[in-house]
Image 1 (cartoon, helix red, strand yellow):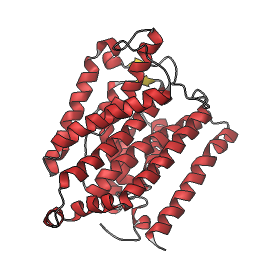
Image 2: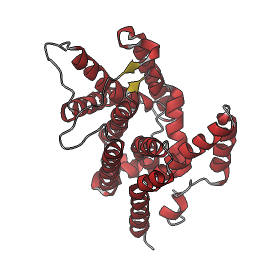
Image 3: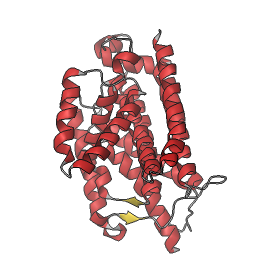
Length: 325
């Protein structure tokens, strides 16, 4: 079976499972089932975006949670001013998702452009530390915004509005998030298989060879970094509407670490693997939190064992046809 067939088959199976899952949990009467599935889909969107630069470009960002938080905060802050009847730079504001969500993604793209340009001047550990440093800066900025709740976070009085879709309906919101996840995976797949994606992956394999062929690495890596930032920001936008609450914790290094652990768990450089990783990680967290409040003591060794003995993650070996990158 070719890699294309494996990807298509796995994607169809995942999509079918995610489509029918809400109906299954509804039949069981488990009220927490649909919120859990929604959380999995939102996290999947974030980690697929992260996999784009880690799995295909070897750009290990330890600060991607900052885009998750910025996406959520832009939506929450603008909605807050609108509900309070305040103007923003003379603008009366709106609660429409068709306006607020693009603004949030634009903010993430601009932030990704600036941080990516500075961070990509370095390599290896320096790149990791710079992305971590910027994420911590964003975290402390959010903590200092006392007008917007500071360390306590900011509540949203209501979810954003969208024509033809009632975002207050849990089922409608879930399927909207799922639809956005599907579109994003297809978009990332298109990028990976495009000429741009081939050059981007070539830089991971041998930057010197690519440079000798006349390739300037910075524009390719920067474009991928910005795209990844936008996808993670979209996940933050959905999270803000899902939880109707944003906090500076969305930008912590621990959240970035969660995203990286999920990508590794599912399989680097597969796009679909991180979705399975999100389901496994959040599912294990749900089970372990019922068993003990110190669930990370158990989760930690599990992730270490997977990293040691399952180096390609849950789906990496299957989707790559047993090939090691």
